[in-house]
Amino acid sequence: MRTRLQLRHLTVLAALLACPLLQAQSAATPSPVNTLVVIQLAGGNDGLDTVIPFGDPAYAALRPTIAPRASDLIKLDGTLALHPALAPLLPTWNEGDLAIALGVGYPEPNRSHFRSTDIWETGSSSNEVLSAGWLARLLTSAARPPALFADSLILGETQPGPLRGPGMHNISMDSVDAFIRDAAQIESESGGQNASLQYIDSVQQDISAAAAELMKIKPSIKEPAVAFPNSALGNQLKTSFQLLAAGLRVPVIKLTLRGFDLHSDERLAQEKLLGEFATAVGAFRLNLVQAGLWNDVLVMTYSEFGRRVQENASNGTDHGTAAPLFILGGTVKGGFYGSQPSLAASDLDQGDMKYALDFRIIYRTIAEGFFGIKDPTLLAAVFPTVTSILPLFKTSPQ
Figure 1 (spheres, rainbow, N blue to C red):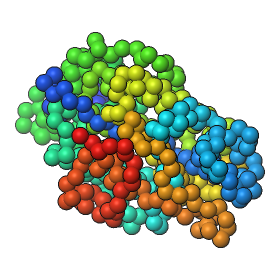
Figure 2 (spheres, helix red, strand yellow; figure 1 turned 90 degrees about the vertical axis):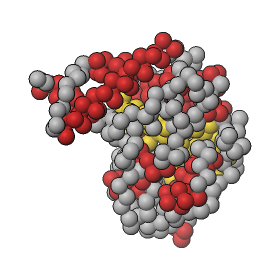
Figure 3 (cartoon, rainbow, N blue to C red; figure 1 turned 90 degrees about the horizontal axis):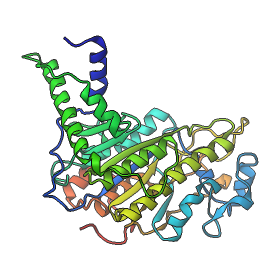
């Protein structure tokens, strides 16, 4: 008989794997797998104080309290600059591996955390509700590379977001050691003819299989050459690097950095969050470069919305619309994409910026240019509202 504790423990782990595990990685399949690392900046990152339009005369007037000091800005050209806390990303920009998509959003934007997150993660229009994430719909059996360990790793949190959908094989964990330890504590028990228990048993088997594969590669997991910051995102990216360097074959890794819903006292909190993001991503890149894996990895950020252009009375910002996002990797053709929305009052929509680049164009660009998915029927089904792509990559995928 399972104890109540064991059942509760099993329920937590059962949520991690909704379907049987894909076939394990194989030494007979040495070709690399391109891995997309999606980092959710949860809460609605203030894009205006991330990539700063210091050349727009309205900016300083709209942000008299929360804007970073002009002398501290990391100027990228004559009009746009990075927040000073993003300094660890400057080498990536200078080497041409960092793309900044400007004014990213979608028509008829929604300012609800829940609904706008759902739109970003499913790739839906604002007036439709989809049950499966955009990556789940994209990674069909025909589009998946062979001999995968899983469709994705979800580190730090268990919400699959863009990976939610039937037939997906997602593994969620806090760390390799914790996953192996937890898997060892689950009893194997026959469910007989009870469908619910049979499902639980199948999940147990999947967890055990995943743990067995992790045990095989564990001797190959090494300390990174470049230290990661001791932060939530730093630890997530450290684990990501270690598993990729050890040979784990997985097309998507999902990470989360929370805390961006800064309605008050934004300046110091935003600086801390952006610093955590930049130092962790900077270390991730340096380690991948040293390991010869930088060309096989693409990092993309997303957030449910930007913030309103004018700071509020609490020295923060409220829910807005368009914002920039970062895309970086060894195959990325760095630079600006899209255009920075004007902050002039006549160009705003009820106090918010008008979007300049549909986020689904970025998704389709990644599908074609990074994953190498060319099936027109699949692309049209996943991205029915966009057909164009960006010249985001230096070379086409193999």
